[in-house]
Every structure is written in structure tokens, then in C-alpha cells.
Amino acid sequence: MIAYVSRDTSNLNKSRIISAVAESISENYVDALLTPVFFYIVFGPFGLPAAYLFKAASTLDSMVGYKTEKYIHLGWFSAKFDDVLNWIPARLSPIFIAAGAGVSNLMSAGLEKMKPVSGLKLAGKENKITPSPNSGWPMAAAAGALQIRFEKPDTYVIGNDFREPEPQDISRVSILIIITSVITAAAGALAIGLIWHAASFV
Image (cartoon, rainbow, N blue to C red; front, side):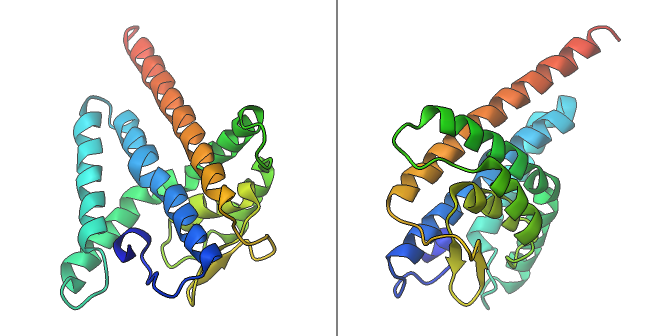
């Protein structure tokens, strides 16, 4: 479990376990979808190799990007390289997460409503709280939209004024990121279509 949520889970209470899950889901949206789509669009004819290159770097970071004696040199490089590749997409992520929160409010009857604008505001305010230069952006956007506190013990607290997360918030963050991912994929497809259409007139 430590490898998935980057913390020792043996002494976490219920709310902090839920927080770890929600943080991981929101942060991995950037790694798993937004950045590959971004690279695919930006690099044009070389978009697919660029997306694969990013996923290779991201996987290496996930495997050895920890500050342990065994992986300190390779892990340090892979972590920093992953930070560089995710720099721009991470800062775009609050826009998509806010859009996802807005659409979620129209579709998820019975669940607590989300606050898209609050997510944008919290991302702008608390994106630097995490040790990573990138993970704070999607996590703060999600925490603000969900109105829940994300906390990694002895490391950071995002949305300190919000309530502690509860079991139903796992469903809420899952719905948020699924809808955000669909919006991202649709926006990426639209961008590619517009680029191809423009290129046909050149």
C-alpha cells in the first residue's frame, strides 16, 4: 500500500486512509491521462511516441522515484524528469477538474454537490503545499471541489478549513475524475480534429 499512496498506512485513521485514496485518484489523473493527451497534441506527428516516452518516464518514477538508499540516484533523476514533463499539464488540471465538478453536479443525484470555483481558488492558493511542484495543483482542485481536507501526516494539509473525508467521498472523487477524464479526452479529440482540419488547408 505504501507504494500506491506514498506513506506508511499502518497507523492511519479512517479519514486519513480515505484522504490517501482521494489524493492518489486526483493526482494520478494528470499522470494517467492529461499529460499523455497533452504530449500527443503538442508533438503533432510525433505525438504518439512522445506520449509513450512520457508514460515510460512516469512509470520509472512510480517504480524507483523514492529517496531510498537503493534508488537515490536513479530515483532522483526519474522524479525530477517526471516533474519537468508534468509541469504544464499539472497547471492546466484545475480547469478540467472544475469543468468535471460542474458536470458532476448535473449527473450525480443523491451525492453532495461539488464546488468548481472553490476548487480553482484552492488550487491557486495551496498548490505549493505539497513537496512535489505538480501534485498540489490537481489535489487542491479536487479538495476544493469536494470541500474535503486532504492530509498526509507530517507532510501537508490541503483545505484545512474543510471537513474530514468520509467513505462516500471515495465515490465522489471517483465520479469527479471519471467525468473530468471524459472531458479531457473529448477536448483532446476536438483539438486534434481542429489541427488536422487546419493542416488540410495548408
